[in-house]
Length: 336
Image (cartoon, rainbow, N blue to C red; front, side, top):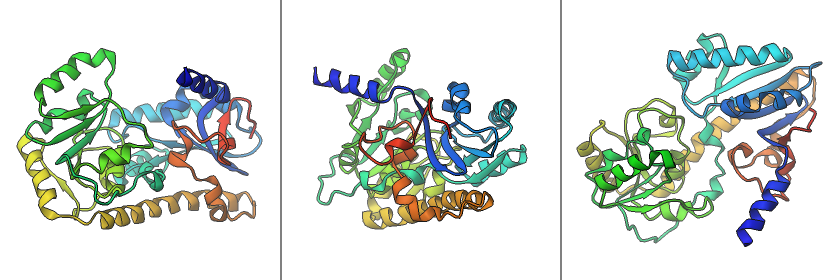
């Protein structure tokens, strides 16, 4: 009953909210995932002025590194531009390769990694936690995550949900990995505790987006066993604490043992990861500062960053109801 009223309250409070976050008001700068923009395009465009330039920053939930996916992006953005020519669309690429390919297609883009906008305070190192598992894989149980590559890992924790239509695949993975301990889901406020129970994290997909959990592992002080991929997750990695192995179950298992043998310093992993994240945050702040300067706003954007920043830039997450960032969630009734 309590959960019912919580869900009801969230539904009422969030009425009319769009999956966009206002990063700046003058000039208007909003950020969202390109797929969310596509789904709510008409409502979002109505919030943007036609008499002055505004900016829509696209985070890329799935890579745009193949011709087919870049062509789709070009087609979508050209259609958006036709509806309000005063809006400038800019992609936040998750890798240098992605950035270059998007720019070569004639679109605006800059290299600014989505994982830099995790709230680092949510992912902690918990000293003296018992290491119950050699490896953990936090990933939806779906084919592209390639759980089967973990077959040879004897001590394994899997955290991930699956959709009804993929029940057959889920059952297949349970049969392939009978040694694993499974947890369907963990509240976001507690996932760091579960991650801390493992000696390393797994990143086994061949292609996806930047994979938030890859940075979550690092912020919790875990080394990573990684496979070759496109999507951008490697951009926050260092060979010092990430082992990239071939797409082979024996290689993955050996990678886990290699990470364990290295006896890595979790605080060093976290420190270096935050340093890389901060460099990407600076890129976003510099981008917006440049637009403020061009508009003659006379505004020091960095001075207000602490009042603006929220976990994942407020996209697809619950922003606390009474936080000062709550008002920055774009609503269909907003007029910028």
